[in-house]
Image (cartoon, rainbow, N blue to C red; front, side, top):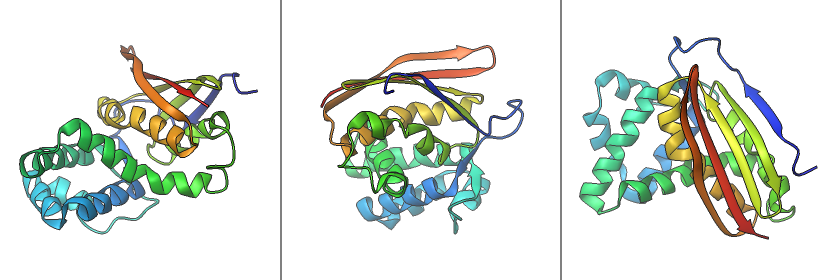
Length: 210
């Protein structure tokens, strides 16, 4: 039922020697959100701040289903956050929260368009592994607890760059999904953030009222 732990493996790679990748749809939706919210000049300025190889990798036309270098996206995000902070007065925390919402909203609507607003939050939150699978190439996600009012999920990743990116977006994705399911007063924290012998662990604990 709701509380039974579930595990989803998403193309878990055998080693951390391969460069980590992220799906093009996430980059594209994130870029579009920034352009619509702050203007194309912010995108252009951030692209000029990162190494040319990074700009070439993520600055052109992106295919939604293709994978792109995550480290390039991380450096671009940092450049965007700095640019928005200086020119718009928006804190990095606020910027990251909102760009995550903008980037995952399309995937959320695609996966849950018949569920949002109809089913209770536990049934919608049960689909978090599907959302994570549409973002990263290699992760392991365990839903530890999923009962009305409380949700706990563990995300295991192999590469530091994936951890750094997930540290920005995993919590905000969980809260956004709860809000889309009409959970009331959702509040989440990273209850664990640990380096493991072969990777990293992020645990999010969400509490809300139904």
